[in-house]
Image (tube, rainbow, N blue to C red; front, side):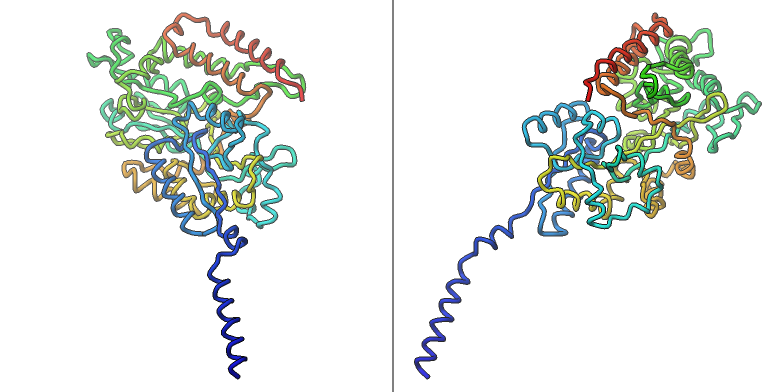
Length: 460
């Protein structure tokens, strides 16, 4: 018995000794997979947004023990493309990028992972989204994104400035008339120009319809394309592809020419749109509409992220029409997985969290409207609580029905160079020398330059 006891004691001691040493495979199993989330190609670099994104990272890391999510935020939206390019070239690309729209994604065409197999493997529910929304992210047979944030095109307006001028607020339904000078008129860009001139005032109190109005001393403007881009501004008068897929030819259509001339007149003849110099001035800080010195701003819903500094009461209305049809350019953002990721499963788990448990907080701080139908009411409720002066949230969902087709950031060959050329045209139009240009000649030159740029695209 004693011998058996001694043997048992020896075996037990050895077992305890072995158990006291960490096993190599246990140590390896305890190591977390690092997933890096890059922010900056789209929205996400605002101070308030950074704070919420950091909280989402903390919540995700606390929710599980397998993945260590790290956040990499670019210094600004402007430098983000170069930052990401440098990371990719150095072989240190992030795993996940977003939120990012089509423009930011197109700058890195070919870099995005096809999610089809991961969606099938995890049984991710795509049926909750409309087919056309999912279709935005299809590239041939590949699906490179899942719907997350949509930003309907709307019109922001300053109630206080309208009240001060004794003007009716913009309509809240497409097709509704606007009452101006006692008459009901169409809510189109011609009407907007008339209203905007009445809301543009110089330092002496003269509005832009007054012969004494001094445009060099403008104290308040009537209209702005807030954070606009050339193609989105063109598309308010109707959509058009940059290049004809059949002929390979570039054309600047008549509706885009009409919009460019409307802009030119608004900036340089009727003076109700701020030039680039005014937009960069202290008068219109921190941004044109948020300064309280612009009565109407056409942009997308995401701009709710950036109007907290506005002290005035404001609301939203429908965008004006062009030749009887309303065109409301809309944005759509999501998160994309970089195809070089070494951890696609873990990264997809992070993506699913951002689209799932983390979605509402992110959507709210991004000023976005959820693609997920189950979050839409909560999203509007959150916005209503944050901005009590806004009464017309009901226009948000219908606005998506008027999104301009094709999308104003649709891809074409040599995309980045083409977009830069379009940006250069906008800079010329808004710049101080813009008042002396021949708009048609500059559009002809733009068309020719875009053709050259596209023809020079590398052949695949």
